[in-house]
Amino acid sequence: MANIISRFASSFAALLNDSTILDIDGRVEYIRDAMLEVLAPHVNCDAPMPPVWFGITRAYDIQTLWYLRSDLLSVLAMLSGENNAHRTLSSITEMFRGTVPDALMPKSHKFNK
Image (tube, rainbow, N blue to C red; front, side, top):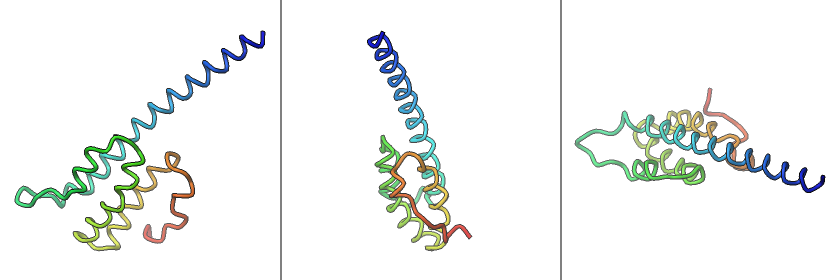
C-alpha cells in the first residue's frame, strides 16, 4: 500500500512540476512581449537596433529576462528620462513576481506615483 501511495505522490508531483514549467514558459513570452513593447516606440528604421532588443528577443528563460531589465532601464532612461524609465520598468518588474526569489523583488515602489 505504501508503494502505491508513493507512486501516486510522485506522479502527482510530476504533474504539478510540468504545469509549473508550462506556466513559466508562458510568462517568458508575456514578459518578453511587454519589454519589447515599451522599447518599440523608440526604435526607428534609420537607427540601429539597441543591443538590448536582441538580448530580449533571444532570451529563453525568466532569469535572462530578469537581468536584461537593467539594460532596458538604461536605454529607456536615455530615451525618455530616468523617472519615466523607472515608472515603465516597475510594471514589468511586477510581472516577475513569483518567478524570481522574493529577495530580488523591490520592496518599495516610489516610481509608481
